Image (cartoon, rainbow, N blue to C red; front, side, top):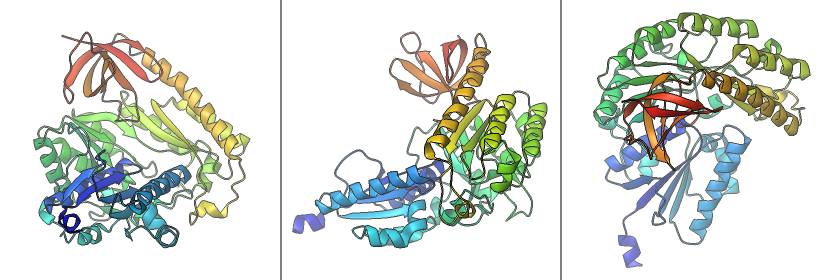
Length: 437
């Protein structure tokens, strides 16, 4: 027993869900280590005696995965393999009371804004001098930067405001300082993320200030690429596109979740826009910046989506020809506005509609990629996998978009470096390329 009490704690942070959760885990990791605590992120070893699970509570599949992970570590605790299990993040924020009743073996549950309370469990303090510094849990050549927290939008299907609270922007000075720290540590690409990035600045500057933030970040030495994610379409600030056009190190890339192509469903979703307005917005963006890659996400099977509305979305996808597209099936989430509507579309129909949309997108993506054959691109190398070095163009984000494959038996590339390549072949979602001398 004496030896056990002298054993130093080893903390393992396990992250579920999106890149915004990953940033939270990186901040927690930085604070724990800054307090002298032996902490790691998804360490892969079995000698950690304290587990912190950062959960996702967005849709059914993500919730189940988070619950399964909690149960896995609770079981390990019951077997004496770990001493403590803490749970934080979106699922914990949303269902804390239920989880405490159902899984009493968990030592404590925390919400999405409870970092100081987690640190107290370790007799640690929140170190303000570490603001802007963050230990990355992946290759350091790219970093997610969360520019705001929470969301004020009333979308019918979304539980994020319940889990993350209202919108809070981070000051420009704080974000610039973080970018400078990242650049000094070798980061070359910043991926700007938020629940709603186009709302940035309204709370603290009383105006949409995303363009100014991007302009200031583009001035940071050492940052070669800045990439914008999760831009809400309603009230989209077009000066952002102008800044993209002016700044060489802001990628010609925009992640703008449109969610549907039917005005009636958009109204049911409470998106504050119409199909026509969304189409006009996309045309306006492409008019200013023809060389832009637009990524969007759509939801199949929202209440009110009949065959007519679904066909409108099919037509929308076929005509807009988005460079990148993801499709989710609707998840009926309690305490959301849509929960009061009848979820009367069978899951298999939702899935069939989503699959059909992705088949259409595969052909669009294939055609667009074929046009790239013979052309040259600047590529950032992310990893070596199998017999290829794997990289991305400025038109592709990490993990969700197309990749460029370079034959490792012919060329040597260093992870984190930029190389110039010429595309020799293309499939629906991959480009094959040779390094240009």
